Structures are given as C-alpha cells and as structure tokens.
Length: 517
Ligand code: KIV
Ligand code: ZN
View 1 (cartoon, rainbow, N blue to C red):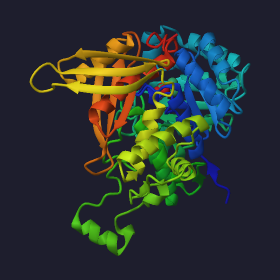
View 2: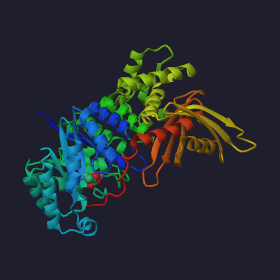
View 3: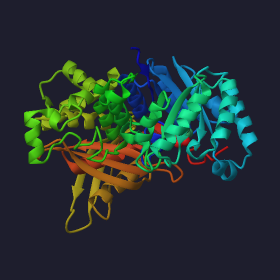
View 4: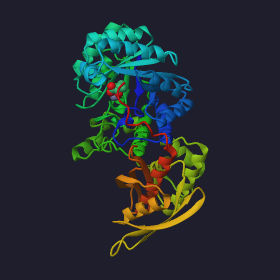
C-alpha cells in the first residue's frame, strides 16, 4: 500500500528563534540549516526576511547552500515583506513564501484594526504578489484557533483562487484541545477537497502542541510545522522529534503515513541546537532530554536487563543516541578521523573552519587526555559563534582576588595589532569583562553568565556562555568560551560575543519595530 507523506516544515530558525534568548548569528544559522537538510525536513523556514538585515542575509545564504529541502521565508501580508522574502529566497533550488494575516475577531479588531473584507483583500494581494517570486505559496490564518470557520473558508477560497498551495491553520496562542483542532482541520480539509495542502502550526501553551498536531494528521493535515527541542514563541511549538517519533512508533495508528525524516539525525540535531542557542531541553523532555533513556529504579533496571522492551518503546539508536558516551579521539588522532567524527555529530565544516577546529582540537588534546563527544560539540560550537575573529585573546593575568581589589591584565590582538591593558572590578569576572571593554573600546552589558563542565573528570572543560548587549536597541549576543581554566574561558566567551556582534553589526537593525501591518 502506498503511504501518504506528512511533510515536516521546520521553523526552528524562525519561530524557534523567537524564543527569548535564542538569537543566532548567520554562521550558526547556516550550520543549523545544513543539519536540518541532513535530518530530512521537507521545508526549512529560514527566517523572516523583513525582520532585519541579518535575517535577510541568513535566508539568502541558506538558499544558496541548501539543495534538498525547500527554503522558505515568512512575510506579513505587506508588499515590502513579500518583496524582501522573494529576494531572500531567490537563489534557492526549491523556494517558498509563507505569508500570513490574522483572521480571529480579536486580532482583526484590536491588532489590525481592519474589517474582515479588508483582511481578505490584503491576503489576496499578498498571495498574488508572492506568485511573482515562486509558485510555492503558503498562506496562514494567524490565530486560526480562535477564528470563525465560516470566515476562514471565505479567505481560504480567495487565496487558493490566486495561487496559495498550502493553507496553514495555526493555533497561535496554544488554546485548543486535540478534539477541537481535529474538528477544525477536518472541516477545512473536507471543504478544500485537495485544492491545497492543509498544514498545522500548534503552540504549546497548554502542553498540547504535539497532541494537536497528531490529531490533525488523523483529520486531514499533511504538513506539520514544528521546531527542534520544541523551541518557539512563549511555551514553544510542537517538538519535531516528538511528532516524528510518535508517527514512527505508533504504526498501529499512523501506519498509513510516513515522513522523510532520518530519525538517526534527531539526537545530533537536538544537541547542535541546544549548544548553539544554549537552551537545554529539560532533563525529562521526551525523546531528547538527558533522562529520556535513563532507567533509575531497580525494578526497571532488572526488566531492562531481561528484555529492553519491558520499559523501552524507542531504541536510543533510532534517534542517533550512543549511550556509551564514547571516548572519541586523542592526541594522535588525524585530521580525517576528526572530520569523520564531526560529521557524525552533525558538523559539516568548510575547509578553513575545519582546519581551525582541528588546531583547537590539538591544543585541547595536549591539555586533556580523554576527549568525548560533548567536548567536541562544545569546541566546534564555541568556535562557530565567533567565526570572524576581529579580536583574539592572547593573554590573561589575574591579581589579588581575595584581599584587595580584583584586577586583571589582558592582551588581545585586534586586526594584527597587539594591545594590553589592565582594569579592576567588583569581582574577578567583572574585572575581566571591564578590562576587555577598555582594551577593545566597546562597552558590553552582561545579561547572563553560565558555566558548565563538559563531559567528565576533574580536568573537564569549562564551557562558559555569556549573553551581552552591546547596543541598547539590539538583542543580546551569545558568546561561548571553552577552556580548562574557567577564567580564561570567561574572557574568551566575552570576546566571542563581541566578535559575533561585530560580524552582525548593521544587520541587527529593524528588530523590535515589527508591528503588525
Ligand atoms: O503562531 C503563528 O501564528 C505563527 C504564524 C506566523 C504562522 O507563527
Ligand atoms: Zn508560531
């Protein structure tokens, strides 16, 4: 029997990036898009072209790189948004514009201040204009979950008439229960009779995003919008890994359907995104949480030893998780083994980036005998976040942290010129960051500081993550630092954030003033 394919539309780079603190630089977005392509997602929503110069650039670079997935840009139903979306995806092999306008009474009256007939007119204009850039057009009725279905049918007819090929039904505020979403999807699916693909986009405010998505499949949806690790606005979106593994594991219910996802890439993708965004899935998170395959109680362990299926419905290997936490490479490992290992972890690097990563790996192997998967993930992610190293840390000296004033002396290289300066602070970290401000000439505001040990052992690496605002009107920038010495890692993280900021400078404008139409 021929199975029907459920398209997986990944919006980690768009709705996922709307998670507080999840902003990513262009290099990181390209890395994520490449991994999503390897994972097998059908459509990558690479960003919101009109949101900022950074989003536009990232979408257009992703469009040039990705060949197996469709690349999509979001656009409000405004000419300028559609134009920017169309230009951003222009070089993609397969391209989609996703345009939307709110259809619920509350959004139309208070947010849009438009009458329903004006909303239909605007939607039709947007879709018509989008067809001048591509024939793959998705239209979303924003806040469909609280919209009147009779009005939705009217607007859906109108946009299909002028070229919309996918109709998305977002439960924007995560309000609906599975049986309600199911009924809505069924009515729209029966009404449209195959004239467009029906898609769903569920938010997780009541913890129902995945359940609502699965119920939608049973009622006619053939595209699910989701994100890795369930990232997204507020409580997030439906988690891709949960949706896909439910469809795969419960063949008794979903046996007529399949997805194009290579589930063995789920775990590497989840780790890549957690490392880049620094947003760790909760430990008990389904499929990818740290404890998802841990069996703590004696009774469970006993059952597992006798037959894994007593307590395990998914094999860790199915999602690409190697529970052995293998000792991977050492001082004598060569470049080919290093490259091969990185690609298994989800990192396919350009030659120059690979060379730099290999040098850093060798430096690390001199200091640390055993290097694990997590060490390598941290090493590559910290390098990626500051791909253009305008500032480079050459030396750090700390003085008198206990009795007198904590102070530090720092030497950096800036465009080939060495500079040294010293400064004091309220604590050692404060002294380090203030000295970097003095020597670089930038003034960062520290919003968050986290330190975590990577892998195991007393000589475990310190992975420091900072979030720094360099300009009050712009989002916080993430920096990663990795070193056996926590203070050195902190200095590196702060300089990493500065380098990342400089690589995006000028591209961050416009963020924050994206009112609705
Ligand atoms: O939640 C939502 O309604 C959205 C739309 C833009 C699809 O993210
Ligand atoms: Zn959304």
